[in-house]
Length: 351
Image (cartoon, rainbow, N blue to C red; front, side, top):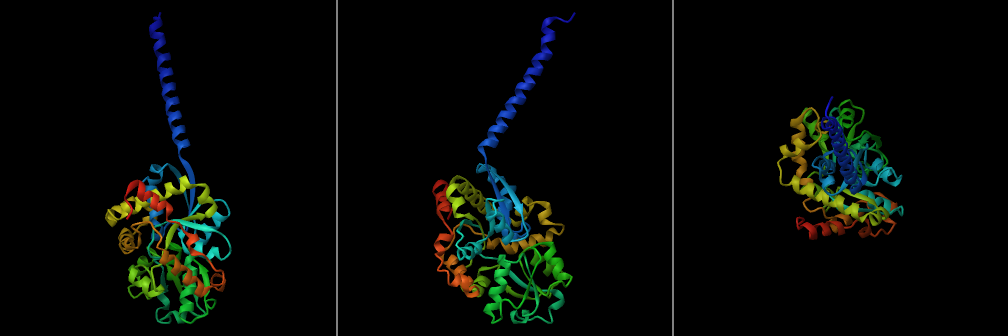
């Protein structure tokens, strides 16, 4: 017969295993409960203009800030905006200009952390049309690709047409996305030109050395020439009501993005690329790296909205949209630096 003490050993082991599993479950459940869930709609995750939003997740910065963040990748900024207005997402990672445009429609949106100092928008001629299209004026009657109708790429196109004395409605706008679909549409001649962002622009330049660029806002110099002042691009924003009701989550998102911006500016392009998802980098790592090097100066070091930059956005939209021009918009209500300032008080890391 097996002694009673020996018979009790398997039972003790089983109880120990059950207790361990129960403890692990309790800890996991407690951790999940401690994290607030936030869904961020991204206006095209493959675009380098949105890199800080994606990189923050890759670095675990959202988790460190106490958030469980789901990134939803959409075709363009207008689609991301629709997701938030429709209630399927909490926050947009998109261009600030939507906040100004929607203010004219009495919809209150508020940006709370800016990650792009410049918009990075580039108006490019399709390789097969280089000889025909030599200026913005030549785009009248042409098919021009944008990420999605109503997105910032579309707004930029209309602004450039108007600025060059061309009817903003004279070009046919075609939604082609921001990544490989946009490059394919350009190379296959489906469109005559497009408003693109990196890495797509650099990818095209890699294959077509004589690529014609009509307007480029990837640097401070080009941005000032185009808009007459600095012009903020990508930011995290939501409805003013959501921000007011979710100050804890808004602060945590701000902290995560600021930490990511600091990480970007203290690491090499190669180190940044190594952290990005493989599907985002793509097969041609050399071109992605070249595009990344072009883009890094675009990323903010402070996360703050420059009020003059916000004014510039309003001025640009007022040129192309009578609705915006006549709306008497108080642009100061379309953004807040409160959460960035609070992060600065807490960590002292923001300039």
